[in-house]
Length: 91
Image (cartoon, rainbow, N blue to C red):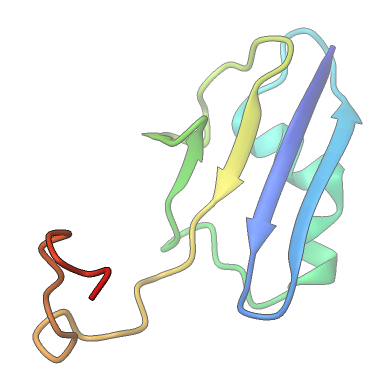
C-alpha cells in the first residue's frame, strides 16, 4: 500500500510517498522512508509522531493513503512569545 511520510525543519520540508506492506505500522514507514538517514538527529524515543495531525504510537497500524508525520520539539518558550488573540491583527 502507499503512504506518505512527512518531516519539516526550518529550512527544509520532506514529504515522501512510499510503498509499505499491508500490515505496516508507523515505525515501519518511517524506517522504510529513509528520513532517519537524512535527519540523524531525529529521536523517535522522544519525538512525537502522528497520522494526519493526530498523535499516535509507533506501533499504530497504517491504512492506504495515510500521512505519517514526525513532529519536532517546541523550540520557543510560550512564556516569552507575545500572545495573539486573532482579533485586530490586520492593523
